Figure 1 (tube, rainbow over the protein chains, first blue to last red):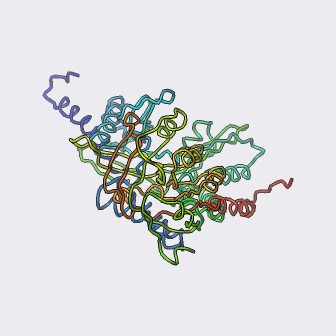
Figure 2 (tube, helix red, strand yellow):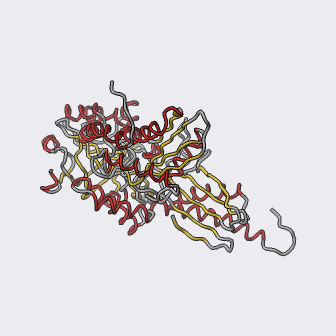
Figure 3 (cartoon, chains in turn green, red):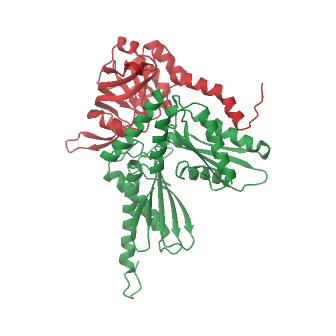
Length: 304
Length: 205
């Protein structure tokens, strides 16, 4: 791309931006797998205080894993996950969206090689593994916009398969009502049992279309653990579902105890008069995610 | 509760009496060799009927697929060795015990009633690890001693030399007991109460 001959440094800064974005993506992948968010650490620690006996011993190991990763840089879980980006582009932040997505993908491959991360990504039919943790459609990149903002926000979720395999959608009828929605959430947690590595965050999507409903359920898991929905009606539903789930006694690792889930998070969209969709997407205890904010002046802030 | 008497220690290979003495509720640490397997490894063993030049009688299998770093001498160093959900590999429990002589399987999430029956018939145990805590387990691996079927990377047959590997929790034992069954039954019993808390009416049939 040839810049206009005005003497501006467009070319140089553009070239740097996409290389920087590749490096940011690379950093985010390692960080998400190694450095758990503070809200997850708090939830694990609170559960450790609450549990007794063998359930407590299992929480002790989770705390030890977090500490070990802090000390050694070893990733917390062996599952390098399937990478999902949630990108929000400020409307005043100049970026080529196609090159941005390409840079994010390159960063995942770079981290895979640099940190000797297991490549977990294969072709769905012939199971070919490029050993890069990327492939057709992976990483998944969701793009949204921030009106008036002059920064770029990149959130990476390298989702583990044990919990992602425990994903559920049901197109209920309006006649099934709220009771049908609640029953589906409880039944999904029971069906998942020990497999998603409890204690979990249960993401619930309500409304929308089938695909939007599932996307909302995943988006719900991204909220800091235990942060209630802004709307009281939804927040009340979250706390009632959580109490009912933890009453089941499935417990840490599904081997009994008080803490089956740290939180239930619900996100919703309006839906059709003849529809009542509900989806569940579960996040395992380690709650891996990492965030980078790129400011207009080029500075990068890392967070969760 | 066995934890009141402290964790037990075992050394591989496991003999029949050691395995028979283990009970659901015991906490365990392992010294010796643990073999890493996963879906593709077990498919090659049992669907393709292949074998390796290694004695696996009394062996412990671990449901895994690690991240590793290749050394200049063509050996491998562990980067992250953790545990995957066992239930996907449930149908291989019986042949692991009956045909290879494996006596313990380490995994997470548990195995089915069919596997519980296989553990009872053949004298085997399922040892639950804390899933997601791979950094702890990685530090307990002294070295990777051998890698068989490297074409299956990362789902090769891995020979890990371990020390103080654990804690592991005996959750399925050679008497046929299963913590997953016990907890599952308890969850079923409490389900009506959970529905009640949410105002869900359930039909009685």
